[in-house]
Image 1 (cartoon, rainbow, N blue to C red):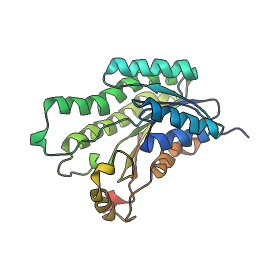
Image 2 (image 1 turned 90 degrees about the horizontal axis):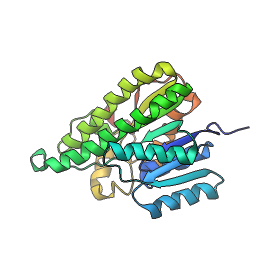
Image 3 (image 1 turned 180 degrees about the horizontal axis):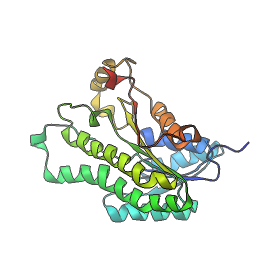
Length: 248
């Protein structure tokens, strides 16, 4: 029996570590040819080798996603490696914290470019092609602070709130052509990127019903669900994967 995503190509941005790496491995395990992008070629090739060692198919594209042109270039490279892109996971992002008064204009622009502009133009480039083929799945990675006001999170949270609105708008735009667009909203998750938060991560997680920090693989499992046929009637949702943190 063929794996569920056999014959498809999945592009995972920020696929060299954390949630992105776990997602790339999960989708490859479902049979997808995974193209993962990131800035660190060494880590990227390590993920590719891990997937290939397990019998999967993968390729890495070194990409500094800093504008619309870099997004379009990544889409083109993914097509070269995979022939076409059936699944897009917009995972790459940055998450600075701190007082609004300390935010520089350059810092503001960097967050919105990485978290909003690049996903927008990747979808603008790839979703119409999916629509012409009559199928496709897009998953955007958000955060619980997009829906919960927290001090020091205005910049990051607002950028991801934009991603959640775009998710719903894209579902309306591309859903009638067979392209499903959804998002996941992770809670505190143990990754290389969140290590800097130290005990703060555990304190945030302790306030939720699960009472613990998530592993990247738990977020990746939710992304794989939204990509797969088991979610065929799921469109335009933001799925909390936060240990119940938004519930309390």
